[in-house]
Image (cartoon, rainbow, N blue to C red):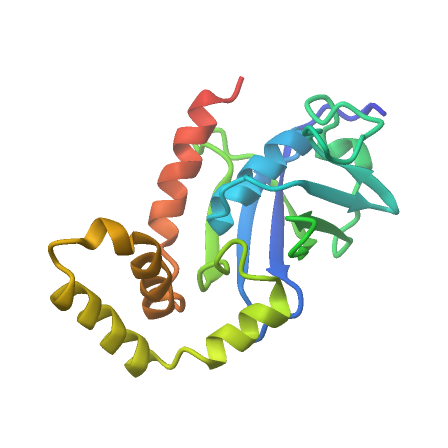
Length: 206
């Protein structure tokens, strides 16, 4: 697969996770010469995933992605397939799935084609809402059920009790504190922190 048009443009993408309400979503500016592998890395950073699980893109019925041991085999090299090779139309959609067990399916939609600004470093996150779900929580339905079971007042109380009652042995409670802490801040999205990580990633890209 190759592109005859070598003009680099900017794709404005809106990405949201299926089957979760209210939506968890991001809006990103990415270069049209970004590869499938780079888009995967960008989505991991934008949503705060840890890249510990298998993934795949499904574009026009064909899977793409970075092969990992025990995972899906892909026909194309993800480090060579660029987004512009697909000649996406505005409003066209495709799917990105992360963690094939929990099945976090993300819809990606091309909202606009924009001119490249040579003074900016891409990718950039320009908007978004809410943190991505906890990893290994069981998928969308399990996540929604967990959220219903964790009202903020109750979670804050449990968090405070752990800190106060076990302050000398907090290492033993790190995982529980992490999970309780997530529900306290799950509605927050720190776009500046994401863009710092994206900028650091961009400096490492060839």
